[in-house]
Image (tube, rainbow, N blue to C red):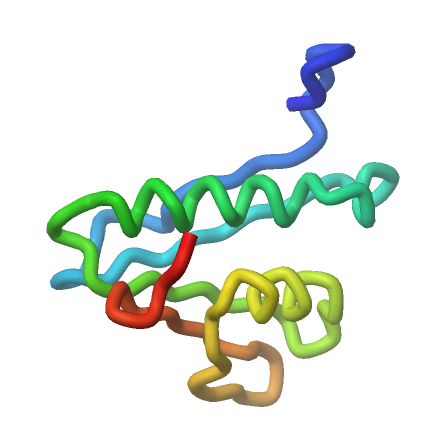
Length: 100
């Protein structure tokens, strides 16, 4: 939500319950608001909160191969590409290497 206007510009959250000690994050920003740092801010907030939880040891995410902006955000946050298929890139960061 854009604070000034209270206009919803996207969504962000955890994709289901943790699997073991791993939780998956996701975010999306409407096209006309992309490139303004909102995606980074949302993903960073999710990552920071998740890593503050004692039970969470890993955070994962995924993005479409052609979504260069999302890949850049995940890389900037310290997630590492762990695999890819024809459509998606899969990312992970562990608590042991995480720095807020």
